[in-house]
Length: 114
Image (cartoon, rainbow, N blue to C red; front, side):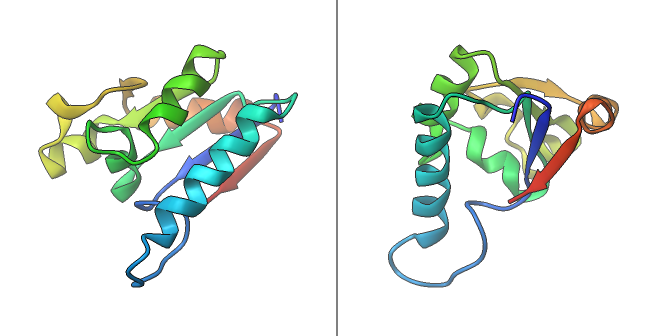
């Protein structure tokens, strides 16, 4: 995973309209498993609705802080944050632009979109 970049483009993982917040549960479990493993991705990039996972009300904020503390680069799209009015609410990662996301993708051997 060290040469891998993960893209988070949704609020949570996948789509669901259920009452149990399934997309958030799935993303939380995914991050928990990453944290418990021996290999972490080089970076996780957040854009479109995915930027909402990096703000103060995110249900996966603790996992993201732990991933960042272990050296995973978290890149959050500034254009998306501005569009949603969320720039001041970001709690984790660096606020970057599309060039930062493209650089992470270009340097990766594998790119995974969740």
